[in-house]
Length: 418
Image (cartoon, rainbow, N blue to C red; front, side, top):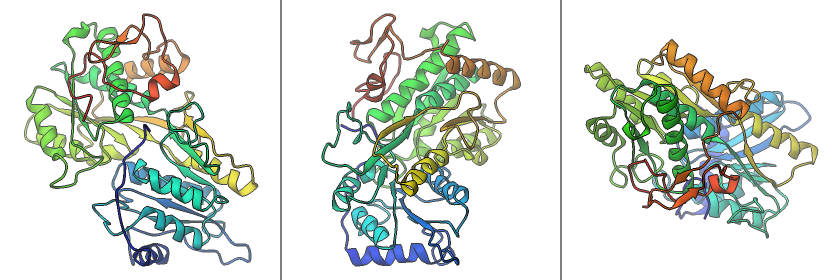
């Protein structure tokens, strides 16, 4: 089992893919959802890399964060004369049912791509197959555990595919703390996507952060904290297939929550929070994925836990260019000296305007504790939701025990299984 993102079932003709990716490389005005940086006018050809996005490149969430990470690479390598990004967005079975991700990758390579980023677990089968079909082309699956030799899904027969991901558990702990410092009802809700190891561990991390700050800084018993998750069934809304995230947000608020945490790729939970606040309700939200997510609900947003893909992607691109690329499993950490450093920190948390100055100071105290190791939240005693032991008293979780999370923790309301 992987702990990454999504599983794609798509069929399509290679001719259709050729047309789509050709359009992606032509002009932004021709197709704003599929573009690349311009080519080089110098005699030296630019370094070309390809990127597959599961959602819209401008979704204010997961896909936009990855897209801007690719733009960062182009910029830091010297601009369009030195680097070129080919990309196709909305590569999923709902938006592009006739497109096969593996064919998109093959076409990008035919256009000169020397590196491929597949930025979703939607692309697991496609990127593994493509890596086998093109063994000399370095590829990165921005998720998953295929290159983790100690992992449960190590692909020993694939030698050009690495994994790159971040320890967003820290970001979610910070997000949970911000929610707990703010709630007036003592009830926090999470709008969750589908259920897998990754989503469970992020909800677990958010709960641990919330519980710590509820008990430590607000001096409230853990038993009085309400923390629940409701899953929509996918990473973003697919009408007729998933639950409506706006309605799920309503359900959480109607159950007594006054802070909702968004764990989707998109921002419906924040938008709905803003609408309810305009109607007179005292409610807040915490964003996810993309650093500028709070812009959709600035008055109600407590902050956003976000991925900063650029620095990691840049290191990978440079390793391909200088011939030192190795297909490793990388689980990147925040830069604790400045978690919002655009050039060094893989995980960040930006405070929103709705977070009070007093709570912001307390939150910084919490962040400092996480960074210096004085606060360790994946530490026993902790039980799973069914009452079985997760971590014994004093036991600190290993990376594997965090990455693979078969259940939610005891104290969280919501389903652990699909």
